[in-house]
Length: 306
Length: 315
Image (cartoon, chains in turn green, blue):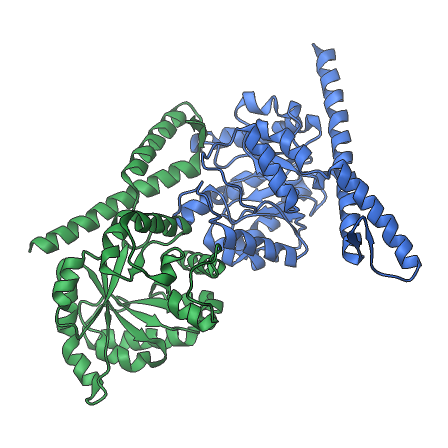
């Protein structure tokens, strides 16, 4: 079960004059705000003034709101961006646990100062370097605030000097993706990402290609995607959830297994497949996941009707 | 050595006479007496009470016996499982070294109490969650108890934990299974399973699939795998043993390399193939494995004949 229903995330600038409109129309589960540091003014003061309005604007359509910060300069950026309504921060380029520990401590101070519940602001991780991959487990374990882990494929490819051409039959960083998914799951976090080659090319593609790519990402273990285009959102919202056919199948699984239990059997066949405790457990998880997705969609619909 | 030949390990339900009473006739190398997922909660106590007699039933055909216990019920399951005749306890969903240490300590006491040499029974962690994967090295290093072989990071429970649907056309467990295998091999433990075999139907009973699976595993050097249906036993036991051609080639390599070293040389070719120290070491392992498989098969044949004769005499 994904800890979060966060199937689609899109990045928008806090300075975008159409921020509210774009966020509202996107139907994304989450908006990630990109900050701009003004070179000619006190950027912290400028951001502090903008952030509360930007957060509210981004949340207008029922999305969760995050702000993307550079891990190396997070202390100053946290000061300027953490306000009521923010679900969490995305630390970009995090390379070791110290950065997490420091961000965690700073957040606790800010939460206290600004009347936010202690521990309420999530920290999400955007991995962009080999160091971040290598240290991913200790980074993920460094703070209980860690919510999601994302590989920024274009940044990591560039760091590893892998060409962006997506002509290879095998995904160059398949093993790294598996590592991040495993690490995220091990700390009860979740991994976000798209399948190869779309994760690198980030092209706008036809609906069928996108649907297939999302399905493969889900089958790999990802729970959502930072969408390169607003046009990806619909496919992600529909793809990172149990399909109607799966819901129907798993309802049947639960019924067949329950009947088996009544006969003293914990292993029963269904269309040639063996239905036992883990299959029933998965069915339970999938049906609960489907219910949570339906609830999340309902929340967004209500936000759009306000 | 025969207890290490576990080409096909198959789960058996002690509470179901249809399975447990016939297991010895099916030719499996190993039967896993299951107290875990194939046993409903309400049946677990009865299952525990049947383990000791099930050991005698299932090994009549010369198979080794493992017992899969329940992670939440270690205290209840182990006293019913640690008996003479059991080769391995399987600890499902192992996630920490502490879990291994606890089971090891309890097993040591039970071995004393039940007349089993202390440390004789293997304790095999089953890696079925992401937390188990990331902690694998410390899990495998947690106790002095010998583990001969180790696989994991795949399967239904792993799929549930990772939130993925199985039976797709690519390897979803490439990282997890490789990581577990690498940790095992770094500690001198043979890796088992872990090779991706496309099974879009999800069916576990088709003989054709078993033959294909055996070929792929054999090519990857894997010597053991778990099966869920008796149709898999014969194809896996046959398919995971060295072929006659492989044994002949290994013998040629052995003799050639021995002559080579006597002549003070280190590399040559036979029929265009390189023979060197690596090929020699591989040949030794192939011959050892082939002999062990043959020994296991003879052992099973004898046991089967003896049990069949006893049954005939009794009736």
